Image 1: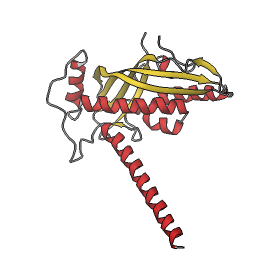
Image 2: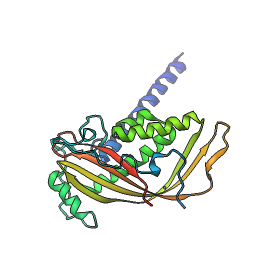
Image 3: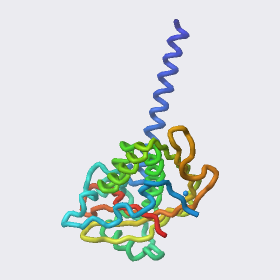
Image 4: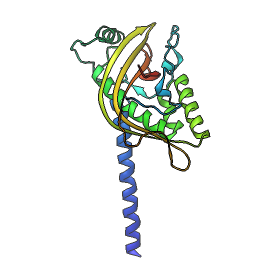
Length: 243
């Protein structure tokens, strides 16, 4: 009896430890976001074309996608006592002028931290899309982008297909463009990654892609945020693959 009770205690301890680890990982992801890879693409993949590429027409308060409280691509809350100011060094590169505009509109904007968070969001979105996990995608995407992703997932499910995406490595992540329009900041990040993308049918046979081929993929993702809002969240409002 004592041994059995001890086993239950050990199991409870393991559950608590795993829960703490999971909570820590979620916290780390949210913290790097500020709160919180010949290219081949399978058919119906929203990454393969402009997806919500036209920026929402900004109104006085900015696009609705940039105001929603449930989006989870975020920078530090400017009202939080522990929020750190952006680096004092001047930005460099083609997007430097745009980054400066964003920093003027939002002094807490840290390009290096933003890129780190954008990369984490990229990896999560790619994996969730391949898994068909709509619930995990919903908080990360604007309404338009989510609808396109959900439609691609639904078409895949209707055909009885399964997408397998392996993110082999990330070659480069950098801010390609930045601007501020009517209080809304837009930051476009270029991801150059190495991926293996394979689509299989219900029997497991390959219908698209090559499981033994690593492809280099370039994606351009645009995030938006209303700089006047106390909500620190950024929303993924467009995805595209150039070329």
